[in-house]
Amino acid sequence: MKFNILTLFPDMFKGVLEESIIGRAEKKGILSFNYVNIRDFTNDKHGRVDDYAYGGGTGLVMAVQPIYDAWKSVCGEKKKFTVYMSPQGKPLNQQLVQQLSSYDELVIICGHYEGIDERVIEEVVDMEVSIGDYVLTGGEIPAMAMIDAVSRLVPGVLPGEEAYSEESHYNGLLEYPNYTRPETILGKKVPDVLLSGHHKNIEKWKRKQSLFRTWLKRPDLLRKVKLSKEDENFVKKLKYKRRNRVQSAVWNE
Ligand code: ADE
Image (cartoon, rainbow, N blue to C red; front, top):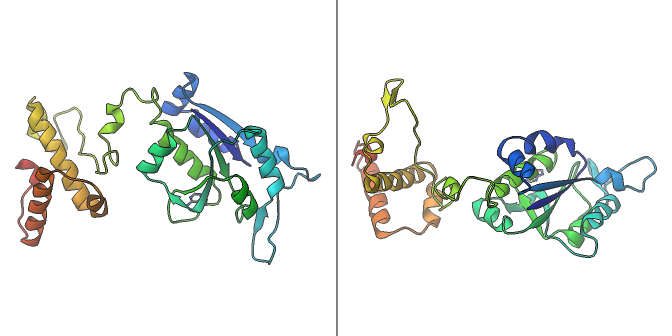
């Protein structure tokens, strides 16, 4: 998958995307990053890319010309799906990450200052994406978060589908807790079921843990996900216990 990143600060990406899993996938040719410096495209003789906002207001607005020409240099006559990182965008969640990972190529525009001239958005942007209801100084950090989340779903980036099919948010639930050696540390022992070698019981335990954690930490997610009858009964029991203040560790059932 190829990411074309239009930014004023290409160097911001390098340390992050050249390391670890994403960096290795780029070396293998599974991912590629094309950094396009918007400033290289300005026609302004002083190299400016921004200007005062019509109608007043604080801050500078990134002008149409350099962004549009940078975008054209990537797309030519063939439009590519273009995302603008913006606090006004569609909230990024795992479902949107999956949708974006189905493209072979994306163009990502990172704004700065007070944002970009609205006419660029109207002309070239297919989707605005936000990483949360807070404002950052630019779209670079949001773009890196989005690229990381999308990249790890590209086949070959992670070792296998199991690497992400069990983790938080993949199936709409939070993931069960994980443990590694040693068996006992800090006076805490790994749950017995995980040492039992009984695969069916382990799967059941993981499912209950997932449901329990989601119910406890993110009840909003639980309302959106489709549950089996067995899952529903388990969640009902949790609610009953809370209402009646029954103290018991649900994973020992
Ligand atoms: N640019 C500034 N803040 C942002 C946010 N929350 N999400 C995406 N892009 C942004």
